[in-house]
Length: 170
Image 1 (cartoon, rainbow, N blue to C red):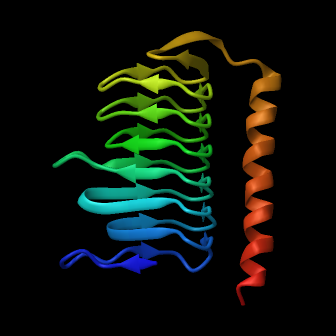
Image 2 (cartoon, rainbow, N blue to C red; image 1 turned 90 degrees about the vertical axis):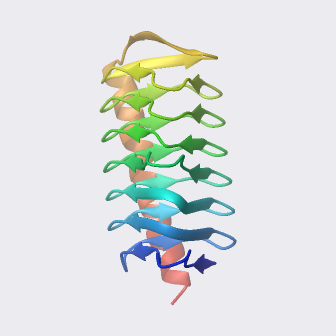
C-alpha cells in the first residue's frame, strides 16, 4: 500500500518493483530499477527517505527517521532481510546484512559490508570497503576481491529477480 502523509506522497520511479504487502508512506523517493521486497515498511512521516538507483530492500525491513534526520540510501545498495535503518546514510554499493540495525546519523561507507545481525550505533562511521560486524559493530578487516564479487552477485541477482516479479504484475 502506498499512502500520503499530510501533504507528502511517495515518488516512485516506474521501473521500481514493489512486492506484495509493502507499505510506503509520506516523503519517500525511490529511484530507477530499485526493488522493495515483501512486507517491508518505509515510513516517511517524520523526515525524508531517499532511495537511489538499483537498490534492493529485502523482506521485512523497516525504514524510518527521527525529526530533521533524513534516511539516505545511495545507488546499488543491498539491504538484507529484516534490517532496520533509522535516519542513517548508506553509501553506494554497501551491503547491510540480515537482521542488522543502523541507527541515527550512522554512516556506512561506500562498498562497506555490515555483517548479519550487527548493530551500528548512533553516529558511528564505518569506512568504505571494510567488513564490520558485531553489537556494537566493529571494523574487522578490509574487503577481499571475493567479498566484493559476492556483494556484486547479490545485487545483480536481486535486480534480475525484481525484473522477473515485475513482469508478473503487468
